[in-house]
Amino acid sequence: MQAFSRALKKWIHDDPCPECGHNRAAHRPDGQGCTYQRFDPNEPGYPTHECPCKIEYGIYDPQPFRPPVFMSGEKAVNMTNEEAQAFLNEIIGTNSSKENTIEAETCLNNGVEYFEKGNLDHAISEFNKAIQLNPNYADAYFNRGLAYASKGDLDRAIREYDQAIQIYPNDTNAYYWRGLAYAKNGDLDHTIGDWDKAIQLNPNYGEAYNNRGIAYADIGDLDRAISDFDKAIQLDPNSAEAYSNRGLAYAKKDDLDHAISEYDKAIQLNPNSAEAYYNRGLAYDGNGDHDRAIGDYDKVIQINPKDAAKDADVYYHRGIAYANMGDQDRAINDYNKVIEINPKDADAYYNRGLAYEIKGDQDNAISDYDKVIKINRKDADTYHRRGNVYANKGDQRHAISDYDKAIRLNPYNGGTYYFRGLAYENMGETDKATQDFEKAMELCGKDTELCQAAQEELHKLA
Image (tube, rainbow, N blue to C red):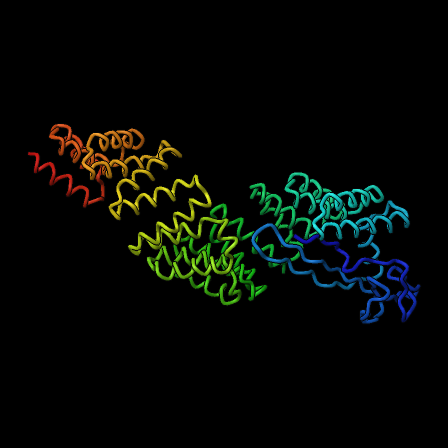
C-alpha cells in the first residue's frame, strides 16, 4: 500500500515563480495570481504559467485493501482566491503559526517518505509531530490512519479517519478509506454508508462503486452489486477488476454462462489476472466443462507459482476436476499438494480417500477417512463412506459400527439406513435389515434410485 499526501507536490512556500515572482500563496490586490508549483527548484519542466491562481488538488494513488484495484486521482479544480484560501484553511488549519504550519508539512512529508519505504513506526512518529505542531492538520490524521491500517490496527485507523473527517467533512478519500477499514473489520453497514458518502461527494469515483459492489455482494444483495459494477465499468471500461467482480456476482446468481462472459472480458483486459482465471475455472466446473476448468487452474499456477504454492484452493479444485474426469491418479497428486500445504485440510483427505476408494485401494481410503474423523469427529458423511469401504472388504461389523455413528450424527440420511440394511442382510440379521430398508423408503424422498433399491431388497427379504 502506498501512502500519499493530498498536495499534488510537496509545497516549498518561499520558492518564487520564475515568471512573475509570486509564491503559491501570494495574490495581487487586483485578484491576479500564479499557478506556479515546485517540488524542487532544480526540477525541470515547469507547470504552465497562468493567472488568476489555480490550485491543483491531486493524490498519489494508494492501493486499497481489496480488491486489487488502484485508486484514480481526483481532477484538478479551479478556485477563486477566496475559495483557495478557505480550502487551505480547512486542510492545513488556521490555529497554527506560519512557522508551525511549514514545520508540520515537513513532518508530514517525512512521514510519507517513511511510509513509502515501509517504515510505519517512523512514519507514525512524524505524523504525530505534525499533529502536535498543528492539531487541525487533517492530512496528518488521514495518513496516520493509513499507517495504522497497514499495521493491522483498524480500530485506531478508523479513529484517525474520524478525526480527519471532523476537520474536513468533504474529504472523499477519508470516507473511502474508512469504508475499507470497516470492511476489513466485517462492518459492512458502516462500509456501505461511507462509500455512499464518497460517491455522493464524487459521483465519478469508480473504485468506490467497485468496492461498494463487493460489499453488496457480501451481504447477498446481488442486483445492487451488479448495478455498482455496471457503473464502475461505465466510468472505466478498462477495469478488469470490475468485470471480474461482476462475473462473480453473476456466478452467485447461478448464471454461469454470463459469469464466464464477464471473466473473458477481464482476462482480455488483463491476461495476467490469476483471480479471473480461477473464478472462470470454477464456473467451467459448475457447467461440467472440467477440461476447460483444468486449463484455467493450470494458468493460475503458471501466473503465480509462488502464490499457488501457498494457496491450496487451486490445487484442490483442479483435483476435483481431474476426479470428475475419471483421472484419479492426477486427482490424488493434487490432493497431495493440498495436504502438503495444509496438513489439516479435512476436505482434501476426504476427496483423496474417495479417489483411493474408486481405484479399489481400500486400505489407503480407510487411512484417509481415519484422518478426516480425527480432524472432525462429527462428520457423518465420512463415517458413512468408511462404513462402505469396510463392507466392501467384508468387515460387516466395522461397517455397521460406522453406519451407527453416521446415523447418530444425521438420522435423516436414507442412504445410510439402506447400506446398514445391506450389512445386516449379509450377516443374516433379516429383521434389522428389514427395519433399515423400510426406514430408507421413508426417507428416500425424491431419490427414486434409492427408493427402488430399498423396495427391491424388501421384496427379496419377503
